[in-house]
Image (cartoon, rainbow, N blue to C red; front, side, top):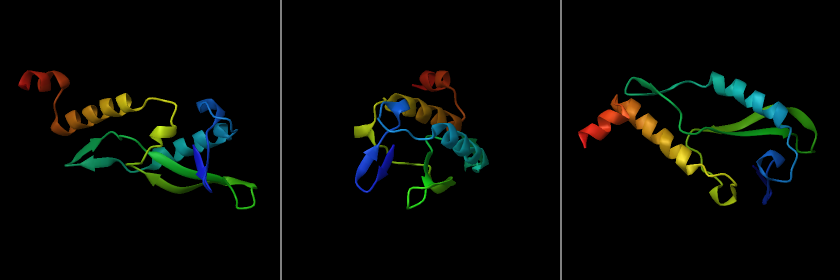
Length: 114
């Protein structure tokens, strides 16, 4: 999703009509993602819920430049109303996984405790 100057563009690969250089941007983001510090809560390293990269690859004149990061959000907002994919079930599953890891429990242990 690209949001700028009141307009929104989605990559063709995601059902949109805009050609982003995803073959370049995805590997750049993955390299940055690997360098992020772990999320540690109460001494436990937890998986991430969702990480959103705000990146750019054009200068103000529209020329290609090396990929740059504006921000990285660990608890990002989603463009749910404009998103062609259902993500809530995946995020819910990840929330359960994170909670169980924090509590040091399995799903079976949680069910047995009810």
